[in-house]
Length: 496
Image (tube, rainbow, N blue to C red; front, top):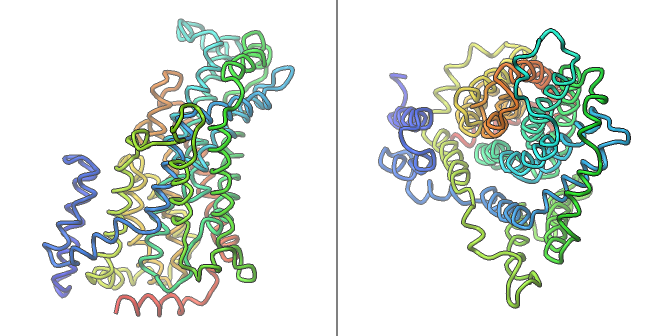
């Protein structure tokens, strides 16, 4: 590092400063996320205008629009109606506990595809615990003979654990499948755009073409694990006297018929999803984005459709719209600022020359096999998140480093970038690993040993699935089989 330019040394010092604040929470994370706005200009890394631009681009616009829509869905209780309908469909007659568990988990998975996974957990957990409230409480169950694993009380307790674990893990897994499901995916595509501006951007549909099959495989593994550990023989008999379709129908009837406002929000949301999926389809079928010369992005339509919510009346009170700004006070600015900080760090990492310094330091990995590196990347990212408690922060730390490792190994950067970003979401072991885990743990239905018992095989399944699909499905979706020299040359050109 002695021969490194002073700017790269300054950048390294700033990174240590920012990450220390993130990890220690000596300063609130949103405030830490704003620190590049004054640290970068003061230490000569970039100008104030340059760093400020990182805090508002198409990705940030995508987040803003989707969060406003999510607040509208929450305000009108649409998520609860959806959850009850799908759960009622899967309940079975007579009761089928594995099928009911699948319905609850699948609903959470679906909701988390379009909302932030923490928001999806917060929305779905009351629905899940509302179902569990009809079951006998766990009081005194700990004093019973634990060897009698097939007793009615133990079977009921195990099913409660399965439902809560299923909700928190399904939310994390569902969030992987779309760009709007979690901030990690947005950080990843933002850094890809920042580091490789001349490469094809990763669109909503492109990401889902890879991430949805991956998430589906991991989701099925989750369901199998939960059924194996918690839905044992005799569960149907133990649960049928407490839980049936009557309760679910009663809950649904209390919501009443769908209002005009609910129908309009679902319509706007559906149109937005269609626009996201069709902006850029294939090279032969360019999508509607080509009509605007590629100037319109996913953030464009996200904000446009969110704006409609402030124009369309809700037909409840004269002059009242579907949304007003007072309802938007709950916008998660902490996540938006964290995304901006991640993009600013990515730009500073490159412009300061620190990327070149790291690249030279990692030459020893040149001959390392991908199949040895990829699982290790997933494991390290996931383990970091277990303790950092923010997969967004983990991704921000890991991705710039992974780009340098990929360059050294002469492989497509996305092979490691995606492994690191998705791997950071495999934080299934501790209650404090993610906000979703905290929500589940506070219900009182699960303990740390339950999370480790379920989370460890789930983490292994996720790493195996990702390590297999990235080199097989990845080339078809992201073009990661293109000659490495093209990527490396482009990268070197940008680093100048």
